[in-house]
Image (cartoon, rainbow, N blue to C red; front, side, top):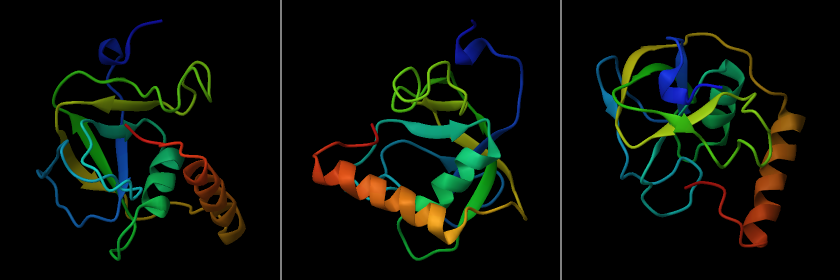
Amino acid sequence: MPSADQMSPQQFYHGTRADLKPGDLITAGYNSNYGTGKPLSWVYLTGTLDAAVWGAELATGEGRERIYTVEPTGPIFDDPNLTDKKFPGNPTRSYRSREPLRITGEVAECPRHSPERLKEMKDHLERLKAQGIEAID
């Protein structure tokens, strides 16, 4: 199986609450969308709209949920937070990079998770946090 940076071109997404525009760069060094309180050394992207929706829905902050289409400016790698640990083979098509992601557009309409499903995920993340498990980086 080829590494993520050797794959054929595909659409990538990034879910967040940050208000950005095409041409802006998403860079490492900012706090996680998930409230870890520490700057991240990676930027995260996904090849599935569903994973990007989770990113936006779970992001901290007051801004509205946004899904951006992005292009990596450097190599990308499978995200070990999700691949071969929780989801062998990377079916979520979750990746990370140390190089910036360039915003190419915004997804105007996409399905959201039900309030019940979102609550289940938030409760799960709270249980992990209580156990001292850091979900990102």
